[in-house]
Image (cartoon, rainbow, N blue to C red; front, side, top):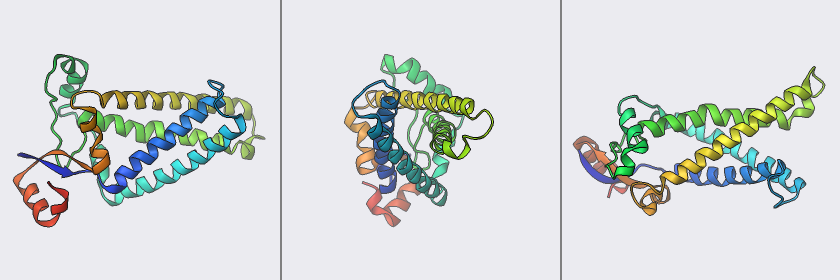
Length: 217
């Protein structure tokens, strides 16, 4: 295999990434404001911003799910146990000894096994937990007359808050990872111009240079 700079993140993926980041940031700030952790904005403004950002994020997620399945990009988020231990060992031990990252990006697999597992859990566990509980809370008026509704609402609120803290933890880890290995700029640039260093087979390189020359440098 030869290493080439290849466009592995499409324009939609980059838009999705940055829009999602901005909306999650707004949701975290306003959500913690609603819980009284800060008083940067009024309660009424926090409710309005939180609800608006949540609805926009749901719309973005709907488009992203459609895009993932129509382009078959969902395959990049399926984890594999092959190489999992090596990547886990690197991040827990090897990185502090200056060892080389054991995983090399391939054209057909953009994420290392640990990344794929983390992103998959985010998409099928944390995100559904946050939006299901959020919608249930938002439409409480529609089911508040049901038996034990206040108790159910309290449980829903706790799950929603717990999921928010876990997402915040993911954000901190994600940002921390940008400071490891390569420079911060090298980690960040693929989500700006879409290009990253990828191992290509001779067949993949020939295909790209012939049919998608704009996607390989």
